[in-house]
Length: 99
Image (cartoon, rainbow, N blue to C red; front, side, top):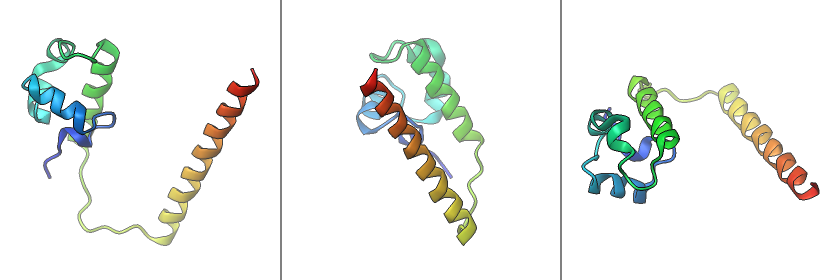
């Protein structure tokens, strides 16, 4: 399965279009550009470039599972994790408001 740039966390349609304007239109060209090429794109400092390159590498190494559906336990675990993550975010917001 071939991945698009928008499969990388933090890369949406507009960022993908910006990257394409700079000759980066696939995971292959992203890897070829590396840190040096990516930091030439407006909005990409060293930290963001490193994060995107790491995420792209992880995506490249990810093996998609064909046709595997989640069972009830897996679905419930995902729901629980999402709920816990939302609770953490709420706590952080409350702390910011207080102090």
